Image 1 (spheres, one colour):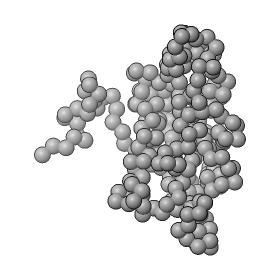
Image 2 (cartoon, helix red, strand yellow):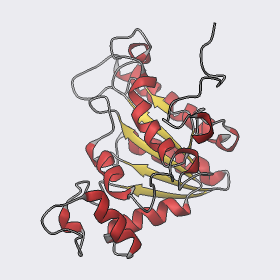
Image 3 (cartoon, helix red, strand yellow):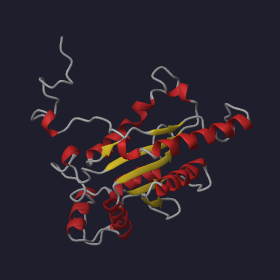
Image 4 (spheres, helix red, strand yellow):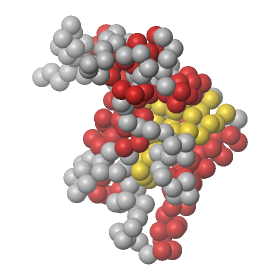
Length: 249
């Protein structure tokens, strides 16, 4: 497979960076081709703005989706956006490596979605979900958190990790990816917050890397998270009443 790792962490020597290195080495030894897309190192600008577009449809009002669509069709998208789209086109699997900051991905990665997943090119009214541009391709998140795993359980103080990652997974599904279950590295303490003594913490990090490598060796056999698709909904976009996922007495 061709595998793209999108890294969103400002410090390449961080544990997120170490997970990227673990993934790259493991996947290449298994015979895969791997590219690393380091958003901070490449100074990717995450802010969508009118200045990115040379030929505005309306000089009095900036409609981002309109400009994305028009410039995609005219092959006039910004150079960095074209580069990112080319990488996505190349990849069979995309791994997003990032820390959970304020219960979501870092701003640079959110802005990457805003700018790179251009309307009229990578999605449209009908080119979504299981009819999406990236159908047949796979994507997954590899996420680090500061708090221990127990705090992200359904009744933990941090809340259910499944719910925190739902928006990210939904966006990937929206553009057609088959979304694999996430890899979550818990308890990656930072700053002044500590849950373990140094030796135990370092051993914990090594275990996380070993577990990640072990999982990646069999990544081609993994089953995606189930999502519903166009044939499952009625004309209002609601799950059909006769669908087996509906609860019925």
